[in-house]
Image (cartoon, rainbow, N blue to C red; front, side, top):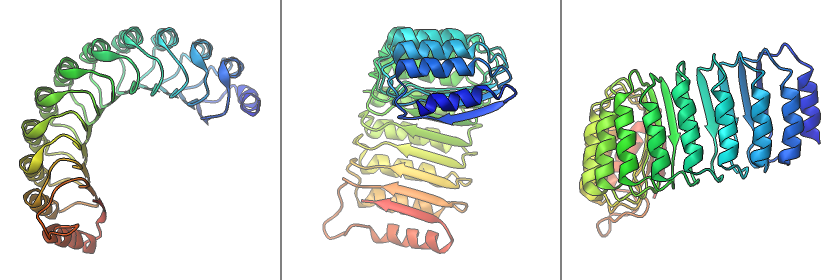
Length: 356
């Protein structure tokens, strides 16, 4: 009720150009979302809209009404929708995809659909919309913990190939994309030009070392990247996959921000050493987050990590996670070389955060 009253007040502001509403967990339901959507139709001058409607159980019916209300906002340049955990399935996504395609000025589109009921058809509809949005410079698509499967990811990957994006974020964790999905994503990434910020969440997707190799080759081609976030835990990439990723990272000389999660992949000491050497070559890095938990990393790997972080002159923030690894007997919770490297960084003003 309170959210709907708020919407009524906002609906009276007909000259509003930018609107951000955070209504997560407000208990809207599909009927509340319908009343809320009706008020939005009066805001025809909006150029930027951000709505957080996560955990409201709006369902397909609520999303359908919300999508209809967006038709009046034909001046929109930036649209951000957080629709996580709303019991949305393919019909609801189809309505949203169709309406978004009718927004001619859109350059930034972000939609989060975590933990809904989206399947291959919904992914296909979203891919069709992506192909039609020719002016996009920023795309954020969150389909993690749905049922998009390998085929749905392939459709999305093919749609990406037709764009010249500056920022791209794909959240596809626990989506069963497999090697084939990784292959198509890699091909799509290779075709993108001018990409500066890339975030890919592929946690727990059975990508394997072969999939890691394809993704690494694609990432290696994006030499204009300044920010990279790659989450690939639980994919069994092994030492071979870690080596391929290392070679890719070494080519990204402009990186200032790197977040890498390869936990639970069995990369071993050898893989950790390869990654550490690649990181040490990134002289512009200001922020480094590395999650190497559960990888059988021993003293050699820790020693290389110590050398790597000590050779990064511009590092301002370091987060390193090494829990669940093996160390030589008596080595203690933190290898002395790594400890010394951390102390030196902290003395220089670097903020360091470790977990073991």
